Image 1 (cartoon, rainbow, N blue to C red):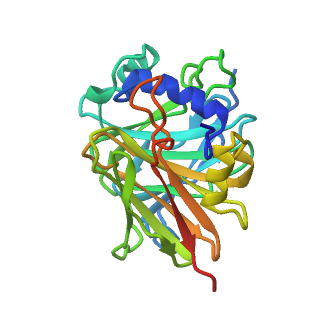
Image 2 (cartoon, rainbow, N blue to C red):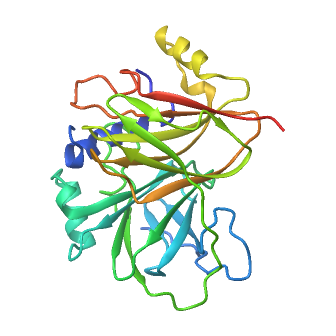
Length: 305
């Protein structure tokens, strides 16, 4: 089964992540980051704060401390290889060093984190097409990592030093007023999406995920190239073809353990007349078929103006 919303590098990195925590399996000076509250302007995602996280080869640049409240992260890759912005909420008392050492040693991570927020992707020199939003909790610490590898035999970017944490304080400056948000909730089970919006209106949407299954699942969301449909993708895949070429952009991932939900939402501007796919590429065991292969795939189509 060909990966349709991640590069082959990401698929290799995910194998390492599953070993560590799934149910189955001289740097540049950091660039300036945007971390200011937006009391004087409207953030499209509807959050009170917006932070730009910068990815380098191989490090993150983002604030050490941020304000509590609903926050949207966008991810800009200023490196020369593809990177991700992968965020989790650590359990109280767990340090970043403990978490990273456990991950690098391929130890189970579930006891060290409360829940994931989500994952953003960015190609070299580009900014993620979506934002990752969450209600940040005061007094808590969040860990950020990139688990990609530059080749099958290369160390993960995390092992090369691409990890960081930030802590959350009570808000110190007035936040932008935030209206109640309407979420497009996608529910996953074993092995299908049982609830999702089949049609979308153009404009900003906030996608949430609930895992109602007994296995670990995800929503991996991608924008198809103009005119491409889910049926075409399935037909290409059935014939053993390369289906990566019909995906325009990966928009991110929300993943969760069985019976739980991630803490973040994927927010992006839905384009009129375009089709989006949602898949789960997890496997229950290293040699088991992917959930995608078992039928865990759906499509969402945006209406035309």
